[in-house]
Image 1 (cartoon, rainbow, N blue to C red):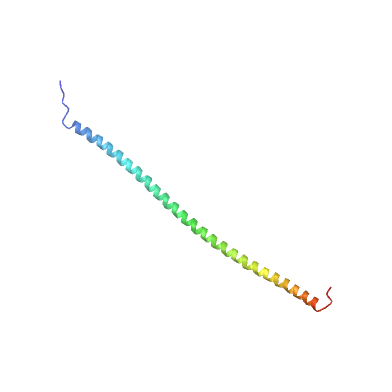
Image 2: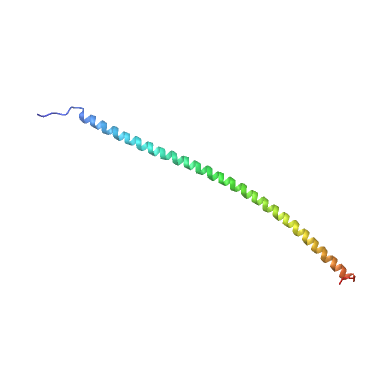
Length: 104
């Protein structure tokens, strides 16, 4: 007894197989899309972190430049005062020596 397969049996099977493939493709696309979105988010977060770090470093460098500038100006004033006092001392000593005073 030969039983012929029904006319739509092969077609039905192919459709079911196609639906499985379509589900796998959809799943593959969703996974890739999720990974892409995560990478974009990570990239955006990293860029924001870099920008924040750059700004913080620039601010710190500006503060350090200001502190060093202040230090050097203060140091110059200290040297000037010391050198002026030293020069005045030597001028007085020279006058004493040249005046024939009672310098020893």
